[in-house]
Image (cartoon, rainbow, N blue to C red; front, top):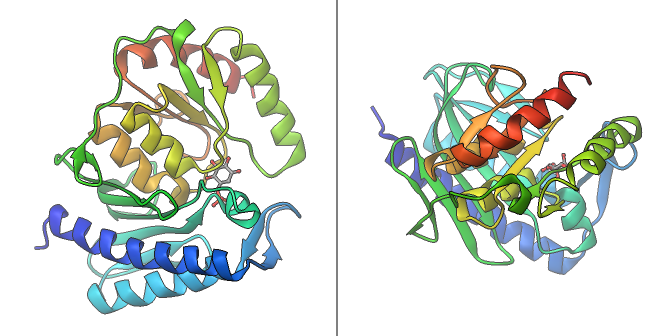
Length: 269
Ligand code: LIP
C-alpha cells in the first residue's frame, strides 16, 4: 500500500514537469486551441500538451489508478484511487501572460466526486514564481518545503477575501452582485483567476478567505487539501463538502463570520 507521502512525491514530480512545459510554451507563444462552455472559456494547446504529459507519467507510475483531467476527461481505475488534474489552472491568465497560473495534481480515494472523495495528496505548482504548494492527509501543508498555516484572529471587517467568476455572463453578473454586497463588509476583495492558487493563498495567509461557485473538481482538488492541512475550514453549500455549488475556505474563526453571509446569498441563487 503506497503511503500518502509517497503519492505526494509522484504528484510533485509530474506537476513540476508539466509546469516547466507550460512555462516554456508560454515563452514560445500561446495559441487558443478551442473554446468550451462559452467563447471566453478557452483551452490552449499547452493545456492539452501538459495534460498528456501528466496522464502519461501517471499511467506509467500508477497504471491501476483512475484519472480525471480537465482536458481529456475521466477513466476509472482498479485501485480505488483517482488522480484529479488541472494541467493549467488560470488558463485566461496564462493566455494573457499574467503570472498567476498553476498545475494542480491531486489524488483522491473513492469516486472522483468532491461530495464523497477523500483527498490523500495534492500539489499546486506556479512555475513563474517557482512556488510548489504541497500537502498530504495529516501531513500538514508546505510551500517549497516550509510549513504553512492560515492566519487566525482576523475579523470580517479586516479580511482580504478572494473569489472568482464563471465563464457564463449571466452567472458572472449574479456572482458580481454578491461581491457588491460583500465588499463593504470586508477589507477588500481579490480576483486572482486561479482557484488552486486562491486556496493555496489562504493556506499561506496571503488571503484570509476564499469562496467561489461553479468550480470543476480539478480546480479545487489539490488546493482544498493544502488549505485544510494549513488549518483552514473548508465548506460547501449548506452542510455539503466544497464543490461545484460552492466552496468556502478560511481559518475557523473567520469562517464562522463569513460563511453565513455567503450561504444566505448562495442559497437564494
Ligand atoms: C478557473 C478557476 C477560477 C475561476 C475561473 C476558471 P480554469 O479555472 O481556477 O477560480 O474563477 O473562471 O474556472 O478555467 O482556468 O482552469
